[in-house]
Amino acid sequence: MNYWEIFLAFFIPGILGYGGGPASIPLIENEVVEKYGWMTTQEFSEVLAVGNSLPGPIATKMAAYIGYTEGGILGSLIGLVATIAPSIILMLVLMAILLKYKDTPQVKSISVIVRPVIAVLLGVMTFDFVKDSVIGLGALYTVILIGGSYFLLEKLKVHPALVILLSLVVGAGMGIYQFGLH
Image (cartoon, rainbow, N blue to C red; front, side):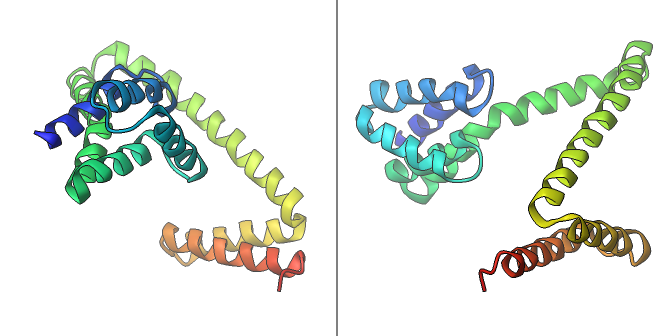
């Protein structure tokens, strides 16, 4: 029965927590502290602080940790699945609806509007990345990374994951060399 409680403790906040992980934290606290009594408020706040210090979505980190403390590895997996299940279910339902009506004029007109907006957002994001790279590493290193990445992706057809990994290694090496951390 404990596994079912772990599932409910994270599934219900996942459904009701509109706005993502941070919006669901008070709901998770209510389930974990008030309803099931697995932690005190102090312990929950400590888990929240540690979770906030780590990269990634806060709700999934908390679900994994609390699930583990209450039900071991299986409890951790159940907590994770319960946290992401509402989003997966909603995405599947929305995709089914979208696929059903994909040929209607309304959906086609939405696509016509959304594509340029996405292109602009990606362009702004790219500009911000380049600006931060120029500020952080300098224009020369930025041009080398962009040119090298383009060459590897377009001319040599290297897989994007490998280009990203190589860029991270080169960027880290440049940073270490530039800032004298060697």
